[in-house]
Length: 413
Image (cartoon, rainbow, N blue to C red):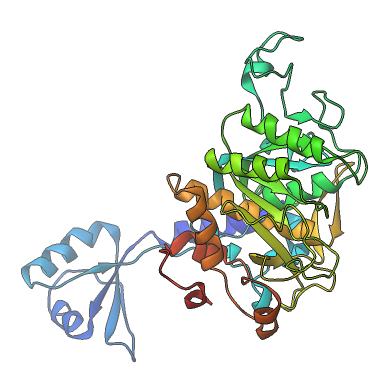
């Protein structure tokens, strides 16, 4: 039997054994009072020396007698309850995902505790990149599908969005319906956002269950700004996208690109952009789209596992937040897995987090989504104070601490 299944089976057996009884907590004084009642059939009474409480154990058939006796004597019974370990996926590759391990204190994104709150995202994440291996074992279940085209007639624009047979996204570089990845970059990004968890193989994405829309805009490692804007235009022709991951960078300001991101804001879409890998201050020498000053755009820098800035990450006040960006283990083309580095790998951590947040609070306005993510970040390393405009993404705090505009994000470090 697989080790993880054996472990779960053992826990189930223990649960069956452990809960074939009725356990309650009472104070020491109340336990003494109950002990005077005849025929209660108390199997055991474990007194806690330091806290003033006693745990009593009775067979299930005697539980009604215990409750009656307690009621007559106005004794409060606190029932025993089940406590579970923090939700951690059993996928074998998780042990290689250092960026989700809680042991790295200064770079901890607090995702394992966040998974106790939420693991599934109901909004769509669009990934503008080199495409995606859509039949990858760890991604196939989470690939976005256009149901109208899937169930429609071949060669027909069944949903009248201007794109024919766009079943799983679009290739804006070659203007066709095949966004398959031949480079691997987009597939790695997709795995970080939404590799399917608890499926017995591979890794776990920030979102265990999410729909990811692949937009192939790159041929090799380069593309044109027009192909990127075409991808935005395609996204605007569909429904459900709330997050766009943009793990790319260019040096030239483009008003049309700026306007595309602004249009995304009017549609409630957050754009998460990699800050770039040139080790420069993008306040002085901008990198786009990270340097566009828009309330629905988050610029993401990369940190090491010790919480220091990754040596090639761009920096500056324009960097809204940072996430782990080195030794990032994720899915790769050829149904494989690999380790990568860069702000391109840090951005999808934040994209996945944003998708969870928008699921947790679906009516939150996109400007407030950005505020919520950045203001719940942690400043874990003093050096970051001088290097960036935000802290390390804290996914658990992001989901559980509602932040008003008046609060300071440093309260959450």
